[in-house]
Amino acid sequence: MPTLVMKFGGTSVANLDRIRRAAKRVGVEVSKGYDVIVIVSAMSGKTNELVGWVNETSPLHDAREYDAVVSSGENVTAGLMALTLQEMGVPARSWQGWQVPLKTDSAHSQARIDDIPPENINAKFAEGMKVAVVAGFQGISPEGRITTLGRGGSDTTAVAFAAAFDAVRCDIYTDVDGVYTTDPRICSKARKLDKIAFEEMLELASLGAKVLQTRSVELAMRYKVKLRVLSSFEEQSDEAGTLVCDEEEIMESNIVNGVAYSRDEAKLTCLSVADRPGIAATIFGCLSDAGVNVDMIVQNISEDGRTDMTFSCPTDQVARAKVALDEIKTSGELNYAELVADTEVAKVSVVGIGMRSQSGVAAKMFKVLRDEGVNIKIITTSEIKISVLVERKYMELAVQALHDAFELDKA
Ligand code: ADP
Ligand code: ASP
Ligand code: MG
Image (cartoon, rainbow, N blue to C red; front, side, top):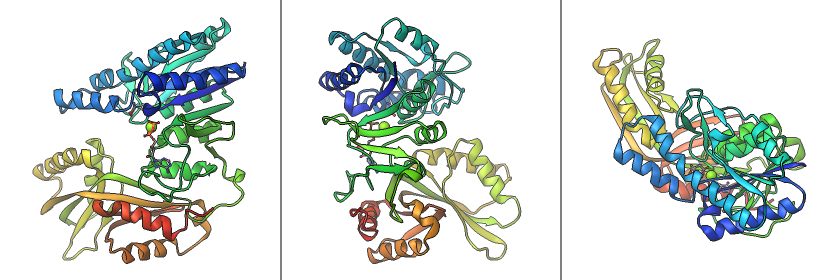
């Protein structure tokens, strides 16, 4: 039998009614003759609640226990989905990550998938089981401990299963009916895309568009998984939603195809650092050792042999960054006058593969922001994106203004 992977996100399994609705969708695909692997998220809000409990119990927690707690939300929905399917007369059973087993490395809370041996599940399909319901987001480390794949990780579970089982397609059911030119929740003019290139989706995801976890897009690209995003709230045809595909499959593309934002960014500056070889290595080496994900970096021109080093990182890593930089100052490894943090910033980016062959996009972006009175704090660019760090209160305004200026509402 051909295999189909269907993933249901948190809002799509938020209560028993929604689970029933999702199970009906699964039933439709089973009746078409597929063996179905269903990947479920935790009920919406559940993972946040679990993370909150862990942080309240132990702020500097043991990451292995964090994973033990935070992975549990998916266990509930997997069991409930299997029960719902059974009630409908569909032969189904649930699997936790370790039972499959979904093998990962030992990077707790951010683990990467090493292998998904298909034998156990295939043996059940051979016995007549029609649906394997798998708890998303979780796996097992070589040490035999439960791991999780980072927030939004059920998308990655789904794509990895599609690759491991050579599925005909991986359908990601969520609370929007596809991938839009920007988040439809903050820009009413956002337009749904029928298709989006892997490269653009990868860039949008890594710049904050949480509709797909970045790793899931990477995996789909590498293993040539046919990846589709669609709504779990509407009746769906085989052409519904957005197909994430190779660039060649898209006939015409705009220069800019999407605007992404990341709300929880912070900007930190080491003021007056000695400008000599090795300071960047010292600063960013120590931040990397402390597990801080540095994103944008700017070094000012130096005066009198001293310079300022500015970087951005997620807001929830500021405390860790401060401790790490404090330590190297105290130990005498690095001398700086002061560390200043601005936690009220956000990142806004425009993305498009058309930028490779077109100049002037950056100039236009900066002009749009100027006209809106939005000050730019840091800029970074790559071949197919331009990102700026701005004051958080201007984030939505910037997204909307850029969406208008690049006419993303028009095909
Ligand atoms: P799920 O729980 O199904 O995994 P997520 O909340 O993780 O859903 O992702 C879906 C959300 O992603 C949407 O509700 C939407 O607000 C947000 N989003 C951000 N950028 C985009 C975009 N470009 N297109 C569609 N949705 C987007
Ligand atoms: N439940 C996890 C989260 O909220 C994984 C997921 O939904 O993809 O991050
Ligand atoms: Mg998600």
